[in-house]
Length: 114
Length: 119
Image (cartoon, rainbow over all chains, first blue to last red; front, side):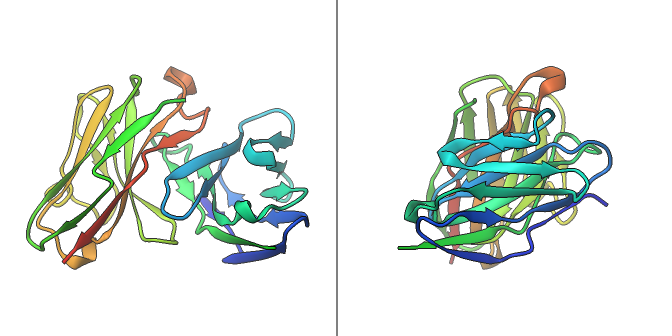
């Protein structure tokens, strides 16, 4: 079965430090991977995606993610965290067996401390 | 990317009543997705709505409880019927970016959500 795992419910990082939010996936075929962010009381915002091409994908707000096929991972990273990055982050993969549906991870709460 | 206007943004409803949520997209899209999300938790897909056909419901969701309309390529509604406190949640609509064979390749856009409280 296709799935997405975000192993950390919460990640705490000091402002200015690098951050990583982990995501692993299990799909048949080539994965279409996405990261979304949800700020408190707001809708979901698209951060970045991997469809094909370079394994390092750059997205919005200075975030990037590295696709690693051998480890079936798509970790979200940022070199220097901001307090404003504090939010809920979701990893998702497109379900290639269905009608363009997304399979969602459980979400990781990112807390950036000043 | 598409822009979605979702209404209402929030509502407090009496149990046993129904609420209809609307999503208007600024461009034509083939598929629209309706989700439910408990605050701080992941998204649960309710159904996929294609224009001109019956919506496809996920396990645990039925048409009588969550009827969906999709009258054209830019608009859809989700009704939460005969509500109970267990229906209190955030409801989100979403569309896939891209057209034709590339639909879904450009990310998915979400409405701002409807926060429903049933009392």
